[in-house]
Image 1 (cartoon, rainbow over the protein chains, first blue to last red):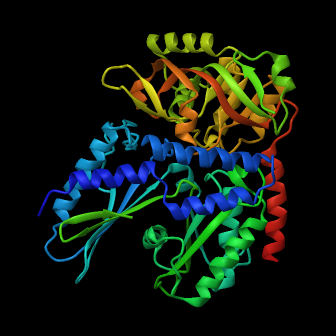
Image 2 (cartoon, chains in turn green, cyan):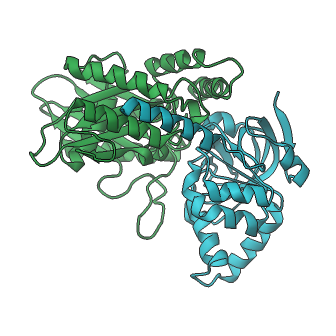
Image 3 (cartoon, helix red, strand yellow):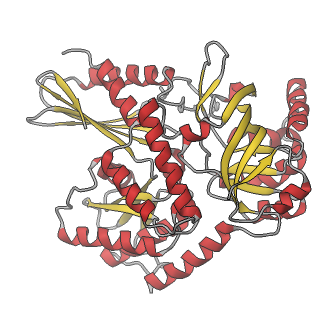
Length: 290
Length: 206
């Protein structure tokens, strides 16, 4: 197999510097929905000016280039070990080229590795073998501000009167948005997982973020709930950066996983407005990016 | 209209700032976030460890630079690490509230008049802003390359052993854009927004 380090480096560069068109469109609509001369409108103008600048200059949209989260789907013939090595080499090189900030810190010594390579989960790489199709590598760069406001509820939640049903899910997700205020760099996007265990809940909620905004939820009840949560979250009036305003959440994605009888987790991953998400597809040796 | 303000800030300039004002800030400021606040606290505010001579020297220099000045909660992307010809590539704010346990004391011990970050801070920092007087300036989170453009020069760096994001970078900025969200008169936009959104949440959950 051809070494894909250079192609993965390009995936990282695009992800860090070039915001996807569907996200930018949603941000532009949000900007238009804020009152003229408001702090919220001004914040959105600054955000959009930055998006244009980083695309042109090939510089990071946000200085917190986050945890690199890779989701790799590989058909027969590709070796996970080899792909992991390419990814790690590309990550170190992207850091040297300042597409990424050195972000891997030893939790005990406090020492920054300097090249974004850390212990086995840094960068995070999820592999899934597939029977047929192309090799695809999805990358999300998720900053620490929005990661810190992500949260997990165990239902029933007595304080919120949230039971083990979709109404309970709605309540806790709205609570999570209110608790986050502007700290996750609103307006944000929500990835929600119902069920799983504590670990898979977070993995599944983040994996929803690789989908484009126009992807339809296969479950009509969840799709209805996604729209309702987005609408109601915006009624909270938190607004861009928490300045107050109409745009608080610009999209919600919900998935459901099997759970134990004893457990009913609702996991909320909050993605900041700088929703850095790109995909690389390798088809017959040709690499394309979306 | 944006208000032009320059560092160091006088008491009068601070008191003139009100929640909601857009400002363009110019002058010398220093980045500092989690490791810096912990270092200042552990060495100089509630000493847990004995400061080295080097720590003492850095602390005195910082007090000189930051008298009436501003600390910026920011972990930048910096080019030129190999040659030490440093240049800020991306430099938006990080979430400020993590420094809430330390900020009031750090403001007082360094002589700060302004804290720059994102997401706002809590009641202890707000109280310190009343007493000092001081102000909290909210930069636009994520607008990192745009903000880096306002950084004219990297004048130096302290505590680079904390790593690039956590080091204390001394920078000269011109027309750094921010919004006053906590002022010296006890006003906090963050407290107001939270009160309103919590009331609405209660309605949506009932």
